[in-house]
Length: 408
Image (cartoon, rainbow, N blue to C red; front, side, top):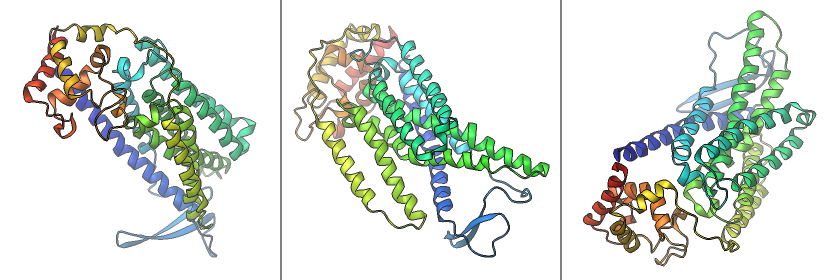
């Protein structure tokens, strides 16, 4: 049974690797076509229906790209669709959500000091929020306000900030940020699946049937693509944030999330303006830096003391804490790990608890049993560089504690 933890860890690694590969493909192609679209030049003597063209050089060769405003007069022999990058990015991300947060709901998804939830309840809330988020967004786009692109984006920002606050009232800080990224990525991928690609297929079908395509389908698809453009960088931030507790595990984490969305807008505005050859708005970088400084300050604001007491152990945690090897394992952890993994770390140079993992109480140690087993028992990842000189015998104690508990 204990080999399940090792296999699960490798499965998580494989899913993460797959997710990164597909995300690079999606974001890379998306950013390329945005830059291409903005950089198109209208020149005389272009073929009928061509909006603009661009000459590019790469890999030792020259490329001549032309964009038709609606579609060419005839269907080309070969047509490349850019859609699977989006689909597999979302699917691999959802797989990671299932492996890490649904499979480890008690540790990574649920914070009983925030809301008392059973794993199935937390998972149901998670799934429902992703689905409902898309429905709300899609209906806003199709409503009269959808005709005002920037007004719609302002309203979308309000929705995202509300979701940021809502997630922090339900899940752990880490899960809240991850879900905010998943919420946003779901909107982006659904835009491709439900709007952009179907609209393009309608245009293709009209061409095949000899009809003149309606330009409205391209307008709608371009609006959704614009939203995806400005949402991409915040999604990347939230996906990386689970490694940085100062982002997700602080008192004003939802405010930090709101500012991250604004930073995404200022950064993309610089690139979009530059690619469109409309100048280089350097003020956007000043605004971005100022927003980032505010985020750093917010992350250091001390959390107001609530007087909350230690929450009771779950059944699984009780099982680890009552194991015959727990006493010896606890001694090793307190001697080799707790100087950093504490509410107030005492190790020189460590000002904040690494990844917000505290290992001071029985419950905290029991709650992180699998991570201790993987990081310090089966591997030598912790402590970093073995700075606290944990011995092979002590690692065997940690391994024996976890494996014997799982085997019970």
